Every structure is written in C-alpha cells, then in structure tokens.
Length: 138
Image 1 (tube, rainbow, N blue to C red):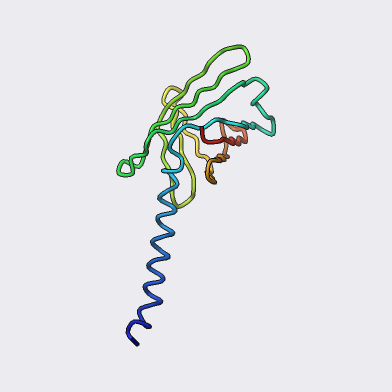
Image 2 (image 1 turned 90 degrees about the horizontal axis):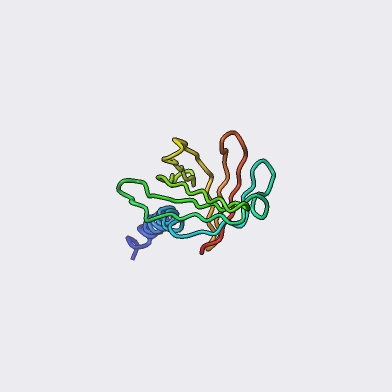
C-alpha cells in the first residue's frame, strides 16, 4: 500500500502531462474543415459586408508526420469578383500559431490561432497590416 501511495503523484503527473499534450495535438484536428468568416478586420476596418460579401476557408486534413496540410481561401467581392488562394499550412503546437504559405502569391503569413468549439480567431500581420479573422465552422 505504501508503494502505491508513493507512485500516486508520479502517475497523476503522467496522466496530466498526457492530457495536456493531447489537447495541444488536437489543435490541428480542430482547424481541419470548412469555416465561414464572420469578421475580417484589417487595420481596424471591417471588410465583411463592405467590399467582401463572403469569405470561406477550408483546411484539409493535417499530415502530422509531414507537419503540414493544404488550405484554400475563397473570397467573393461585392462586384462579383471571386478570389481563390491556396497553399500549405503548418501548426505550431507550442505557440498556438498557424503559418500559411500562399503558393500563387509567394507569401507566408503567421497567425496566432485560437479555436473554441466551432469558433476560430486568427490574428497577425498581413502585408504590413494588422489582420484579425473570426470564423464559424460550416
């Protein structure tokens, strides 16, 4: 019984460590899927409902071994123009960030990433401007 009592703190620590690391690993699993952007703010100016009528993001399955996945952004403007950009994304589990590499633009952007259930927020610097994207799972 004494040995069991002395092992209890170590077992508890291992269980907590395992649950914390599994929560971190789930970040890219939570990101996978389709998202409808509800707010797209650039330098304190909201763009949804203004120049942009709709904005969707799709994050394909994340390959944990390769540490990347593919993404697509589709933006529909009020004049009917449709912009579609795609590339590769990487999730940094230590910093809760996602790095997007837009293939056709030759642009790499890092966003802080927060996901709460079906709500996502990404914030960072996009071409020298402060950008915040809020989205809901489709």
